[in-house]
Every structure is written in C-alpha cells, then in structure tokens.
Length: 378
Image 1 (cartoon, rainbow, N blue to C red):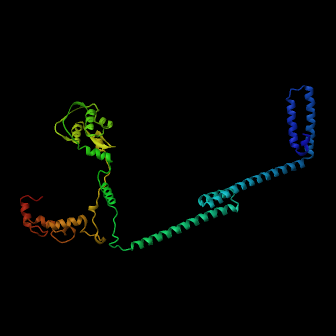
Image 2: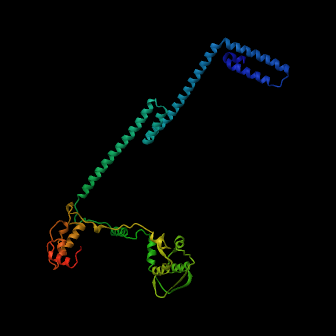
C-alpha cells in the first residue's frame, strides 16, 4: 500500500480496506489481531490524508489515465479495422484479377459498410461496378456482331442457287417417319393412356368361350378371366362397397360359344351394378357411378372446320351462313331471302299450293273459306 500510495492512492486505499476486513475475520488471538488492526488503521489514516492533500493531482492523474485508455482503445479499433480492410482489399484485388466481378462488387460493398467514411471504400465500389458493366457491354457488342455476321452469312448461303448436281435434300426417310408417327400419336384420341393401358384395351377383345360358373365367388371368376386374357384385374373396395358387393359374392354364369372378354365382363358385372375402367395400368372393377365420374380432356383436331377469310374481308357468304345460303339456293327457296337479298318470301312458299313461286300476299278467298270451316283461330 505504501508503494502504491504515490502512483495509485485509490488502489492503495482499497487494498488497505480489504486487508482490514481480512484481519477482522481471521481467527488470530485478540492481542495480535488488535495490534495488526492498529497498524492497518494507521496506514489507512495516512493514505486518506495523502489523498486529501493531493486530491487535485490525483484527479488529474485519473483523468489522464482515462483519456489515455480511450485513446488506446480507439487506436486498437482503428488498427483492427485497418487490418480487416487490408484483408478485404487483397481479396477484392484477387477477385478482380480472376475476372469474378460480381463477387468483387459484393466485397466492395462490405468494405463500404465497414468504413463508410473512407474514400477508398467508395472508390472500390464504383470501380467494381464500372469493370463489370464494361465487361457486359463488351460481351453484348460481341454477341451483336456475331449475330449480325451469322444472319448475313446465312443470307449469303441461301442465295446459292440449286442445280442438278446439288439437288434439294429433305433429310433421311427415318426422320420423316418419326415425324409422321408423332403426328399420329398427337391426334390419337387415346393418347392419354400409356402403352400398357392400350395393351389392356386390346386384350379386352380376346375371345373367351366354354365358361360355366355356379355360385362361384366373384374374385375367383375374375382371377380365371385374368389368367385367360393375361390382364391384371383389380377389385376396387370403395366401388364394391357402394353397391353392397363383396369379393365373395356368388356368380352364376354360363357361355358356350366364344365371345370377347369385355362382353363377358359386362354380362357378369351388369347385374351387380358394377363396371370396369382401365386406369393405373390395370383393369379396375368398380361401381357404375364411379366409372361415370372418370372425366378426362380430349383435344380434337378442328383443322377441317377452319374457314379461310378471303382477302380478310368479312361476308355473309362465308362459314355457316354461306353454307345455309347455298343449301337454300340449291333447294330453290331463294338463297338470298334470309340475308337481305332477293328471292321469294317464306310466306310465299307457304301460301303457294301448286308449288309455284308467288309473292307474300295471301288469297283472301282462301282465308274466307278457312274461316267458314272453322280452320282459323277466333
């Protein structure tokens, strides 16, 4: 404590106070303890007097130490920031050398976030943007030049005339066959099905004959048919439950001549209000209501229904209206009557009894006879 009194009196005072507490709580004899306490109290008194006598100098020293501590902390933070900046700048330069401009721009933004007041941070960010955009512009100019040259080169190639020594080629026949096959598959109505499902549909036409079942369970009958036609048949529990049918439902069926498998299935399933549907590459046996609920989209080719517009000018003589006009003209009913043209009126046709054309006026004598006979409404 006496050694620290000159350099750090506050710490010396704290040390003496802590020593006095330790002496008081020690298990020494009262005589020895009191002697030690008197020595500690004398040292405390001297230290307190020293602090009171040198208080301005002590406060100045403490303030100087505090300022020096803050300066040291700021310097340490600044050095740490500079070290981080140096590492990030080295990484930025390496990325720029490797032409990884987008990643370098990300590093430049981190540098700017770390030290926004540093002019170098903003310079790195702008430099990365400039180099990346310049690279994109150069690439775009190169692509435009290559595209323009390729287009003009194709024009020059197409300007080469054909002669007998270099005839026009339409490609291998195999390619055209594949195109035709793809076109047929595209317009095929059952293209929603897989190859396996199409095969099952073909096997439904398998002839089956000489069948006889007497109180045979439904699942055994279907198992025999599945073996005969080599088709996977699946019983739908939900569909059977809706019609109160179980796999053990007895079946009585007999056929002597050969009929197709689908006819046999209809004859067996119809009395049970069941039906079959090809789904999930199996022949599923389910209720009639569930089979009716199986909906799917089918795209039809309507190319034959497209009516070209001559000269892109709409007219009443085109499409369905034109067909109706031509039909009435062929029937001798005056094709233009319904479309604002000439010809006899429909009323004239009704009023004419001898098949000859007439005008729309009705003979009053005929009306009088009809009225007298009660043929006209009152």
